Length: 337
Image (cartoon, rainbow, N blue to C red; front, side):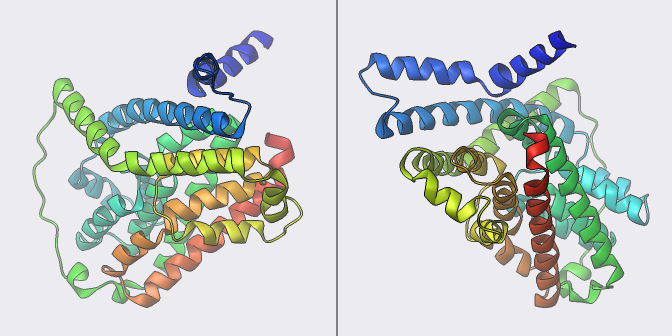
């Protein structure tokens, strides 16, 4: 048992967390005369380490996830979802959301297509909530930073929000609050060509390049913010605003994430820096969920597809779910970290 535990810790720290890379970069910077114990040197080390680590993990994860995704083109996904009914369809939609694009703005066109194709509104919303909030990439990245208990709990609760949110929207019968051009649209069935291994790998590599080009700016901005928080913002300030002493920390973090636009890869370094400085785990994860699910650009895009009442209900459900998850993690933090 001890051998398995040691092996897992090594895998989590040195393979997923790539802590060897952090030590290597620190040694190089020290050899160049830059004091990594100081604010400037520490910021440079944090920036280089997190940028390289996230981009390497990003490339590997997108390659694997895109290969899996090649088996679920929109038409096939629509047929699979259409063969299920009730809460089972919501669960399946939420699970399929885990192998789709990495940000909400990429998921909204798929949501519009599924809705136009006549899939139940609650099912399409379960997909829309799950897709940016929870994916296989978030599981691996969270595991590399916070450990497997936090990662799995985060994913499970994210799926619960997606299923519950879609079910509530379905029960409210809000189909008339989808814009008319979506409701009266239709999706033609296109025969999907069976891909071979080489074709799937080509598709997966194209997705790596395409996604990397889109997310690199957000990763760099996120890492820069994380480096600033990690080395320049006093710890007592973070603790005072987002620590145990502030019962509104989760709400503040959720609201603070709304104006931003990033995916899980851009928020990880900020979350890592906040946690290191003393922010509560639930506060950090609520911030991540707020950014990935409720970002202002995504809501503006979604408004083109749904009417204000439905958009307000969607935002309310997601916000309440995120706040619940945040406070839940604050309670269980001593048991999982």
